[in-house]
Image 1 (cartoon, rainbow, N blue to C red):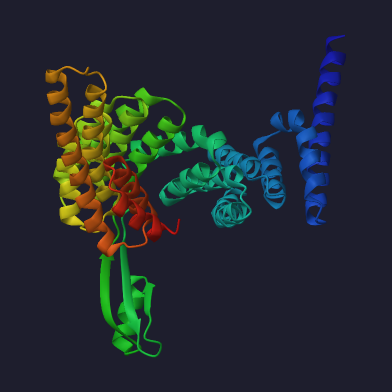
Image 2 (image 1 turned 180 degrees about the vertical axis):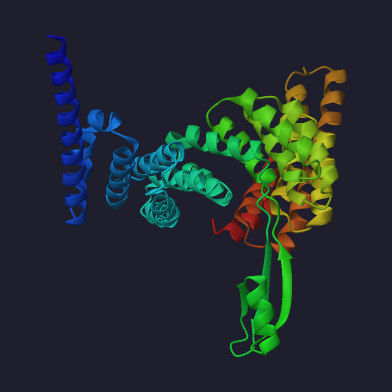
Length: 416
């Protein structure tokens, strides 16, 4: 009885070996006949048998599966299968299919990048991002693929933000810089500046076909990466994570005024206007000739009722850009707002002699403030005679002053 069992067991092992070879042979034939789908399906259906085959058969099977998957653009499956080939043959010490697998993996890197470009052109951003990430995993030294994968994910919108965050955080962990040296020279025949690698550029210049060789280092992408992490968190409503990301970015890039601005805008969006104002002040100190920064400080100061600080900011903006219309309008508005506050008090007064005297005093002060607002806008009108905002605000102020002559003049300019 024992002998019979051993014979039956040996027979079953032989049958399994025949079946493994048969399935692999059928898959190989299908692939050679151009039917990659059939080859892939055959091998996947026989995977249990293949996993128990000897290393030589396993390596052959995974080689066929990898090539079939690549033809079907199932890049993840192709990469996994071809890497399995290398792992199996490294362990067995018989690298029959390894060289071909390595060559195919290198070829697939280019195929993945080209396919990702097509995906992005067709706005299939998630698929493009995944392919670029796979290309990066195949060629880890080409970290630019990981950077492009993150950018592609961002282009895919909110649904892809988690994917983008993963890629950006991986770039951050790698301390990815992204700066590079660009080599250029002017084509003598066309007069156009052309970019190329250094060796080619130097040869062309030496040959006389090009001139004026230059080297330019592109900016580091570190700040952009951390800024994008913060912006994505902000878009997702994860404000604590966003603020932490800005802190990190600013600590590493203390001279980047745009990071300070973005952090300020985040504080503004969550209602912390004092922090917004503080950071805008820092930003304006970093970029004192940026009128937009000064203008924004003025706007928030005016919203908070700090009219003197608002005026100071608007005047500084106009000192940099005398034709900054919104700064002119808001500077005028600070005086109007102060005058309107006096009207509120005037309306509370009675008819006594003291109240009448106080009323006249407040009215004179109110008119003085309104006229200060008028003076700013009339000056602005000289260089912007058709600006509707200036004309409309002037009309309203003259109406409030009871200055009918100027009121009608402005109405005529408006075309009313």
